[in-house]
Length: 193
Ligand code: HEC
Image (cartoon, rainbow, N blue to C red; front, side, top):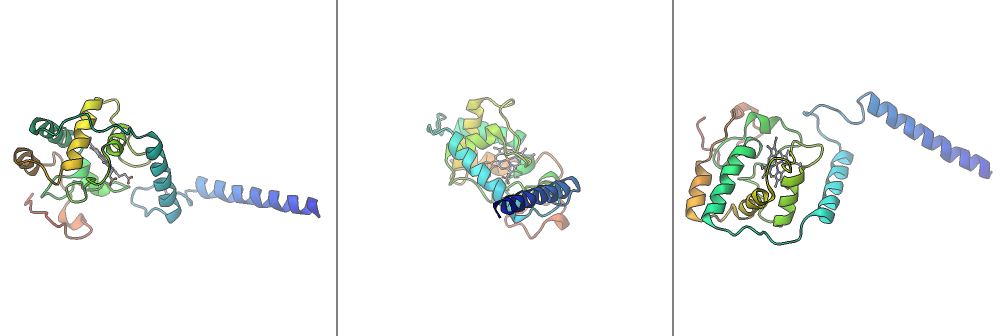
């Protein structure tokens, strides 16, 4: 009786592993293309794991960079060079690169991260987000540059006049997605490019 039960459990495990193996090696369980819709399971696992990692690892200190015009302007320049290709700028359509990415890159001028703590944004920029297009900038930006970007992202909806002007004037340095590629009309997209 006990033997039969143990055999049943083992057999179920072996069959389960076999199904998972075949599903993965045949590309059925986890599609490898960037234009596939991710399963609920995949989305759940990715977001739970990200939340837990950030909670454990993000710095809890306050942002060491003071909110001055000079620092905001430096952040906007860094954003233009390193981030706008995926995260967009105010008043322009997203780039073709951004539209083709999976996971989608949030267009930060429309859907910002002002509600997130600076430490969380710092962590995301420094370490990137695994299995998405979000790169780790740990080898290319100094920590104070990352804090400067985090400062800007925290306050991008209420910038002082000079930085606000520079932000509005920023342009994406690569091809914009054709209008026909956009999922729905983009609010605030006034560009004629
Ligand atoms: C090659 C494309 C790419 C570049 C360049 C890029 N990102 Fe990202 N970023 C992404 C993607 C894709 C995501 C969404 C990841 C996900 O779904 O979890 C993301 C997510 C984020 C998030 C989290 C947004 C949220 O709603 O929680 C922040 C903050 C962020 N990026 C900031 C930056 C900054 C700052 C830069 C420049 C220094 C940058 N990213 C450069 C692709 C990019």
